[in-house]
Image 1 (cartoon, rainbow, N blue to C red):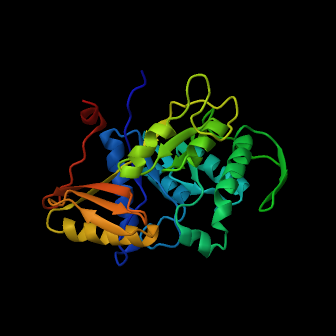
Image 2: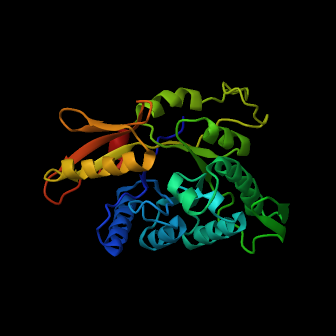
Length: 311
């Protein structure tokens, strides 16, 4: 049986008005601390238009984190592939793998924020197909193939990477939330998956149907899948934990949920009577984000080690 590992996923979420330089340094301090505690992976995302989620290039942030850490694996969570030429993404990930001593994980997605697609004038209906197309090309480049490819949004001519990944096979994963599209891509390309929002009502309800592959290779999902599609061992579940000082945790939580509602076009946000659990509902009333709030005293933040979590 595979060992249960633990990692951290940081969007990040920083309230507008704080100094960006200090925010970046605090996030890097956190990665360094997680490395010392023994966490196996650290993930950070790519966003462009919300203000709160301020990392535009996860590769740049992870390269800086690589200089301050020794063993923790560093993952893009995620690179929004429709926003980039696949060749450039492949080159950046290979460089990151070398700069971090073979600790890079390539996580990709279609783009989480509708405002990002709007900013870049990309039709949201094209995002998932473009992600699928880009993954296939990038993985061919990772394998050292010379690629000639023409698409309606990018073109390659006799293209090969000047460097290959330091790892014999760089780990790859796609993001999945509630719909089966992420799982379908993981099965098609034979790569890992990170399930976002696994603590939410809708996320929990979707997990049984997302873990869809049987040993025979058949699927509960009605859409056709390649015969070689199998359930990979690199399945990751991500849930939100809100950690703040006891003196301002309610105010901070309220600000975060106001942001989440605005970005996700949600109908409502609610909290339990003791204020320890918060949820955001979509336009149909289904809970799509569920966050456990942890309060701490003074300036002390307690993070459990992976060994303690396993016990």
